[in-house]
Image (cartoon, rainbow over all chains, first blue to last red; front, side, top):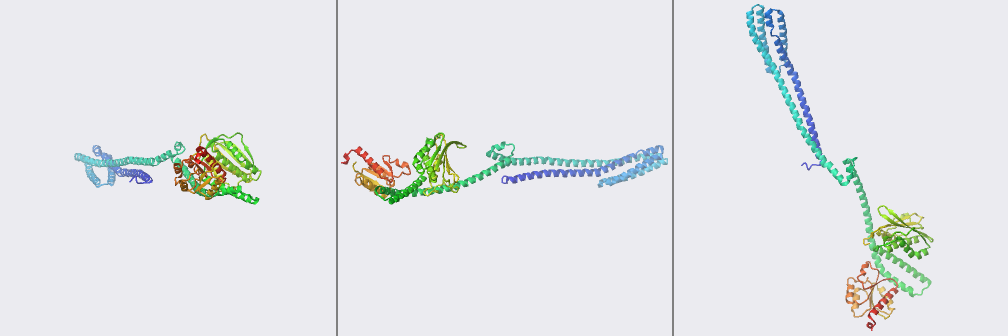
Length: 496
Length: 131
């Protein structure tokens, strides 16, 4: 049952019980204190006044003693006067005592005292009369009896006083008992409050603080060591960071999904293209063979010669497209070896010399010393450079200029790299197509296959490097190849 | 150089005929085959050939188990593979005693290679076999 309650309910129940217990304890104490207070007040109001009356009654009775004897000795009426004063006093206190008597027994007792006193007074008046008349014998005789009566009366008064004393003692006992009840209740509540407090504390520590600390220890232990943060602050910081991470991961996932869809599409198109290229290649070879044979055997007029030349050119173009398609769909495996990229640049320039001359393009190589050797496939790298330079030649008018800058650099996270920058003096690449030029099947050239730059980019990527283009209209275009300088034979390609 | 008997297999009819024509101008006798089965049928017909020129793209090369058949029944028949660069370079490794020539439009390369192969065979076997 307890286990099935939610943590919040458990804490609320414990907290409620704790508050209830504390409040109940307070209320009981207040109530009992109040009860004792009224009890004591009653005691003072009733019994003490009544007790006082009883005491004064007794003392005024006691004071009457002796006067009759003194009178019998010297017949001085002064003694009688004094006796009368005390008699009046007694009567006053008797009335008060009667008024303060609060139960029938006490009233009865007072009645008895009153009657007894009246009888005693009558006897005393008789004795005084005897003494005044000079009958001393009779007076003394009655006086003796009277002393006996006085003794009894005094005892009655004393008893009345004693009853009061006992009542006060009883009230004391009751109040003491009630005080004990309060003490016991309070004592009983103290462990209750302590137990509930401990339970609440245990629940808070075990169910909240502990798990929070555990979470923090798992996610970021340095937060625990930070004294400026308490656990909840640290946790909320962690949760905040976590949310940011999740957001980031989500957007990355979305982006990579888009990329995946795109690359899947491209792979599909690539496969299709390869299939088409494969099928075309066979009849195309036949055409090429016949054309070759024709040119060798025929004696043609200049017009016919030109027609045939155009046909040959266009067939060569188709052939290039087909070969590029096939190459794109089956990237050749890199044959890695240690070589300085400067050597490869030189090879590419040698290979392209006739073409560069026909385009009247001047090439400048900025090289302080040959670049260090890297692991690379020289043929593929040469292919990339040739491709980029042919593109540049085709983009530029006559008398163009290609500048090749070779340099070394250090990149954070990658390490040492070599960089080859190919800058041309052509019209540059329009901003609108700049982010598409590396996509397969994108071409801005009439005779382009749309695969040259995407193949180049893939070759560089398989070397673990990157290719990047910078261009501002009118200021030419620059292609920047960055290749890692690795000690180990390693490429991005699976089998390299 | 003595004229020889050649068996030429190519997927494309026009290529077959063109190459047959070209090789015949060299004085050779050229028989043609359209598929792996036809190669085996022609070879099994009792006629002796000096060289097999094979395009790997002819149908049923794999299905008819052509390579094993050739190696088992015609181990002395020289093989010239006249084909496009195959998708998988390892595919050629199985034809370890064959010569590979990439197909292109100029038949001169083929003629030269054929001549060289025939010469080698002539030297190895002597002229008596031709008598």
